[in-house]
Length: 472
Ligand code: CS2
Image (cartoon, rainbow, N blue to C red; front, side, top):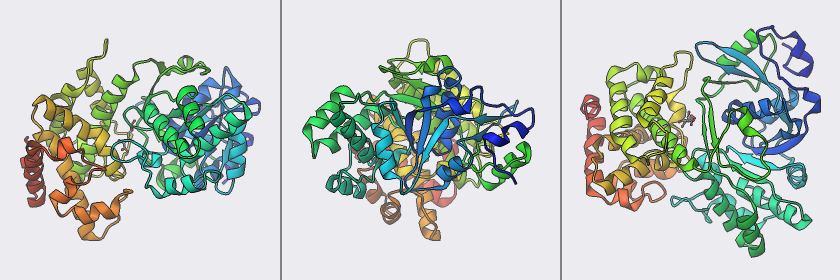
């Protein structure tokens, strides 16, 4: 089958939405680390629309370790299909990537990062990609950071690359690029700034000061449900559009990007980005309400034998539990934001899970629990304990996670998590789990109210009496 490319655009069915700009006129203004499905479905869709009015913001997609996406983007002239799965489905061709940099092209990346035309660098490398410890600060013992400290000119981590890129620009007297972290972490911009400054300080304190003082690291909240692209999905896209597309992505129609304003930014508001200095409130609401209930659905739903988010929400007892968790336990932990209807937001989020066109695997959401749960649930639990609110319901998904780790360990199955070996070894013993400070903050782990609630819920999961959990 012919691959999708600028040359094959003309042959696509009329219903396929084409780019609104001249692809050949686009130049690179953004370097993006981690061009996975989420980036291609979310940020790139905003940039694709932005290019219609300003072609100087094309994206260079960087993936130095895994070649798949970069190879596909190169072969397809940067084009791919965004399948919007909703009541009114749509196939839209995204043409936001003007360059792609893959394994073995580190020297070229260095040159691109130094180019003054690059005004933004951004990243979606998932929580674990930032090499942070349990306290949210750079983990100086992380093997990639140990490497980058020893050989800063040949970085391995994304932090090392950002610092090297900024170092070159400072040396050349070029203004820094703004660095946009687009991952699901509380205070993501501030965390990335601190991590970059920490690494830089180890070999050049002047650079560290410059990074802290001169480089913008806006906080952001990103949101759009984007299931991974599997072979069945790619085959459906090929059948729909009549050409092969190895970089196609799928998502719901809903998409939100809330970003702190920064100097030199393009007109992102014109393409639907919300620019506000109060990103924290949105970020916290999204992480706790959406990602918190998502992870809860994943671990409890898998224990109940469900496969997808839609299936989990079609189980009345589980859906009722998740609804109580959102309204009664998570919402009380959110600060009031002016004009923000928190209960309405929670209902809208839960409704998005009931989209029958989206097949979002619970097993995908269950990846990397050690990296996700601190932001998604443990912060909420810590605040509930401090305020004297009950934590019985909130402890249930954590117990479900531990039960999940035990099942995987017993079955000899792979746990997809950077701490897999540690988790596997500790999961059999609740005290050993609670002692993992990379995951459980002391204020949560050492509180008997949490420990009791957790061990009661875990006992229910172990005995298979899941109804006892779902009626909490
Ligand atoms: C999900 C997120 O995989 C996961 O852990 O919770 O990817 C979620 O779909 C997005 O954050 C939605 O914006």
